[in-house]
View 1: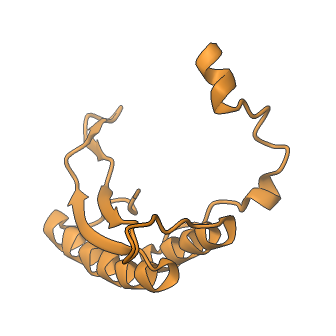
View 2: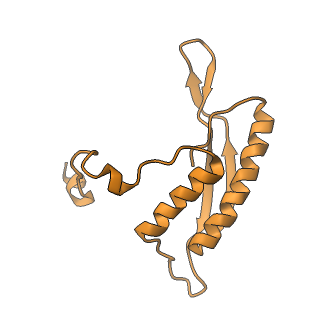
Length: 119
C-alpha cells in the first residue's frame, strides 16, 4: 500500500502511519471478512532527487489471510474492492483514485491476460 509522503521526523511519521494502518486493518477485516496477519511500514526505498536530497517511496506491505473457516478463499466482488479503496483513502488521508465507472474509456485498450502472454 502506498503511504502519504514523509513529513517531519521519520520515526514519528512511521508511528503515525502504523496507527492509521491498525485502524485500516480493523476496517478491512470488518468489511471483507479476511484477516490481516501482518503489516510492515517501509521507508527504505526511493531515489535521489534533482536537488540531491533523498525522495522516499513510503509504503506498507500487508499480508492477508483470504481463507474462511472451511479453507475456501473469500472472494471480493467489485463493490467490496471499491469499498476497500474508499476505506484506504479515508483512513490513510490520501486521495482516492477514480472509480472504474468514472475512468471508463480513459485507460486505452484493455489486453486480456491470454493475449498478453502471446505478445
